Image (cartoon, rainbow, N blue to C red; front, top):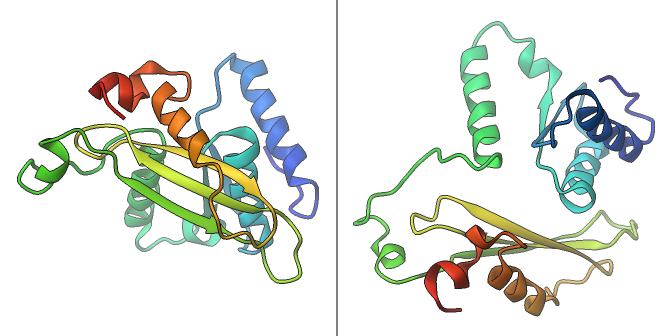
Length: 181
């Protein structure tokens, strides 16, 4: 689907989601956007995919795909990213490399807060990634919109609840898998 980069990106991404359901009756797993150039549209696509649609996105610059030399490496790198975003495992560490995780039920957290640019009054986005398996290769994410320039992740209770409930999917519940939290 083509859309004008100067237009309403939110509307275009929503239309793409609806077309996926309408045309094939499939749930959308990923949105791949081929961009003419970098700029604010990249951040908007990521923000909308992560916070409004709940669908991973992969942006690719058109000039990367137009290269004749090294296209195989470019495609390999893109599909490694896509594989990980769809829940695949690109690398698995052996137990001796990650024994602190495999010996005892362990959760690995990563957290960050993203702020929009100076003078932009959009909400900050806090995001937490959480390991979901004993090899620390599958991660779930939890993101929340916050007041602009807020550096504190305030909804820790919501994240704990998400871990306990597995985001309504018991196979992802740390508590259910390990009888503790």
